[in-house]
Image (cartoon, rainbow, N blue to C red; front, side, top):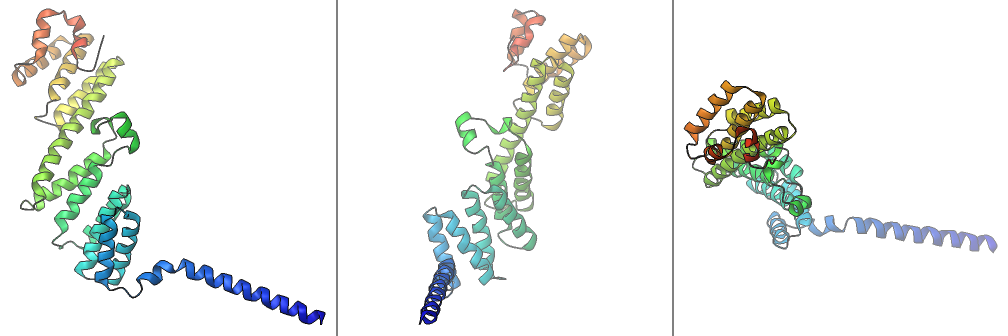
Length: 276
């Protein structure tokens, strides 16, 4: 009798454990089961609805399922592009860029290739410092320039390879903005060196900005930094040569009005962003 009770209790325990395991397994597969019998059109519609609701994580999951089920079709390509956009909106720029690079590699003749390059440029263009950049207002020119340069190259692909694309005009505008900010970045570094008394380094960084970027507003500042640095270093001929370049390129520069009023020894106070 006692043994029968033990056996009954043991069987009951096994049965309860089996039920618990079934419950766990069924719970883990709920999402998969939910979409098992969906058509690709329904799956795409659900992904779009989740995007509209800003449920980007869920949308990404649907797009990934759609890529597998519609493999080899234009719908799968569309899903991959929209997944990249969802990853971008979900604050996952590295994943978005990876998805786009894979799309570009696997679909070199896709009619959506211009959009893939454009979106890659946009993702890198907006790849800032997250919440910290919003609080501290740090702009593109004060950050690491790797993402900006990658963004420029992506937009350049759109403009050069797809000049008639609807994304080409905006790509050209963004390229111009990036050029301006990259040049500004060089000048910011030149100012830093000037403030620290590293005048040779300041000259070299200002020269770099002038050589790499033409027709951008901050070139005037780069020339002024060079003039002031040459003045402090006692390199009069180089200073005079640079003044002539400044006068030819920026004849209305306020620097020349400053020159009439102050001695050269105090000119470094005129460099924007640098004070005595």
